[in-house]
Amino acid sequence: MSRFLLAIAIALMLNALVCLYRVVRGPTAQDRLIGVNIINTSVLVVLLLSFFVADRPTMYLDIALVYALLNFIVTVALSRFLETGRKPLG
Amino acid sequence: MADVVTGLLTATLCLMGVVFFLGGTVGLLRLPDLYSRLHPVTKGDTLGATTIILGLCFQSGFNPDTLKLFAIIAFLLLSSATCGHAIGRSAFVRKVRPWQTPAAAPRVEKREGESRGLEEA
Image (cartoon, rainbow over the protein chains, first blue to last red):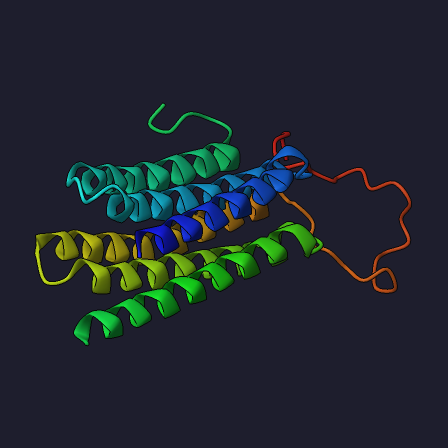
C-alpha cells in the first residue's frame, strides 16, 4: 500500500510541475497566484501521503495543518495587496 | 477481509482525486482568460484534495490522527473557496478584461485601458 501512495505522490508532484508553466508565463499577476495556489494544495496532499509512507510520525500532520493555514494567509494577503496596492494594516 | 475493503476504498478515492487534480491542471493551462481559469482550478483543487484525504482517512483507521485529517478537510473546504473569490475580486477591481470571442470583441486595435493586474487602474 505504501508503494501505491508513493506513486500517487509522484503523480501529484509531476502535475504541480506542469502547473509551473502558468506561473512562469501567466499574463497577469493573478494568473501566477492561481498557479501557486494549485501547487500549494498539491504539496499539502503530498505531505499527508508521505505521513503514511514514512510509517506515521505525528509531526507530519501538524506540519500539514500549518501549511494549509499559511497557504490561505499567503493567497489572501497577496490578492489583497494586488487589489489595493498597499500593505495590509499599513 | 476488512483490510482488502479499506485498501480498495483508499485506492479508488486516491485515483479519483488524481483525476480531479489533472482536470484542474488542464483547465489552468488551456482556458483563455483569468476568470475562466479560476473556475476549474478552485473546484478541481478542492474536490481532488478532499477526495484523496478522505481515502487516507480509511487507511488511518479510528484514532486521533483521523480527527486531524478531518480538520484539514474542513479548513480546506473553507479556505479554497475564499482564496478563489479573493483572487477573482482583485482581478475585477484592477479591471482585467474578460475574454471575448473574436467576433464579439470591439474593433479597437490598441486597447489603452488594458491592465496587466499590477499597474494603477
